[in-house]
Image (cartoon, one colour):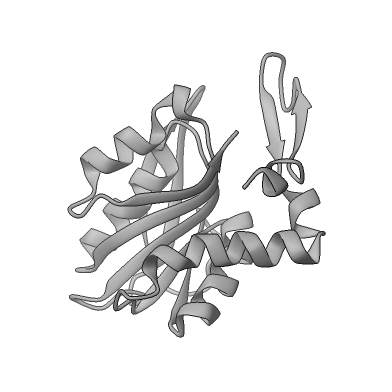
Length: 175
């Protein structure tokens, strides 16, 4: 996994002072690195019955689409409020300075469907936790979650594990 680590650029003080932003666009631009990341994110779920991957906007779309293809299942976009064209359900989550909302189509998840959540990074876990709540409200079962970057000092994996009915938040690496 060290080869993936070198492909992720860290940008200090972005978007504000004190933040170390993990930029995966450098990983996405490297064909071998991208393939290795998709393989590592998919592999723990290869023997699971997964009905769909739920990718969180925006980098979760890129990774989630590839993972859905690899797992031979559907893809569900989870977007910021107001970005989806059909009837939606939303879930609030806390930001450092306020609240935001993510949404998905109200008919995106059927009762009992097994869903894998995908995003590029987990920090505090607020967005991933909101995705879990959306999927559950629709009757879906969250099988797990996978991320390229985990910032363990912010407690996101631990938070997500306490929320998920079957906690198994996998990650390619911490950074």
